Length: 215
DNA sequence: ATCCCGAGGG
DNA sequence: CCCTCTGGAT
Image (tube, rainbow, N blue to C red; front, top):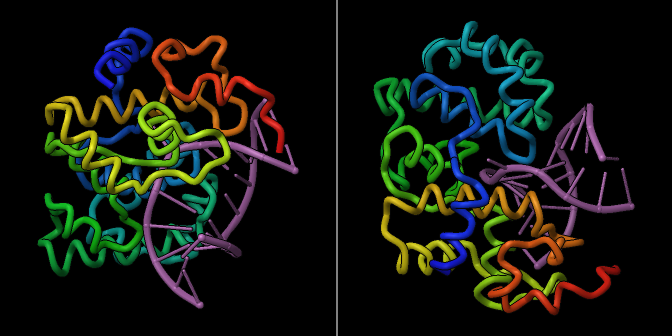
């Protein structure tokens, strides 16, 4: 997949995190909010959110309905507000108000899974991690395991290990980000645009996907 | 109708 | 493995 990565680096020269944040806590919160939404919507609520609740101690004491009202535009506001309350309470009680720096501790927080944890580790602490979301799963599945557009996807943890095995740690965060951008731009779930795909030449799934994407 | 840079719960 | 959780955009 090294050739593919090289090409994606040209297509997407910069793979910076699009979320607005000033410290690890803000990134953690913004990343939890970003599940199943766009960064644009997350960025639209974070200024007010962090002005009102600048740190875990403040957010842990938030009124649930007030918190929900602020984050409402990102969707899933009820569950996410509950996660933010539990998460910030846990940060103040168990981690001295600091965001922990290990996968185990991060994923023990409510609302934080492996993908979110790896995003935080990579972007806030510069600790190498490979975030695997639905885009990464789909794109690497097609590139490496020749999964067609309807087959079940490979195990995310398997993908994580495979990638981390053949790429140096400093590439993990950026590779993941570029696979996500590519998945969103052309390697769609239903109708992948193989005709204009920069990876079509080496992609083993290109002919499978080129056909009519019915169903 | 279907898709969003997911996670938790059954 | 399945479902749910939100709402806006396309």
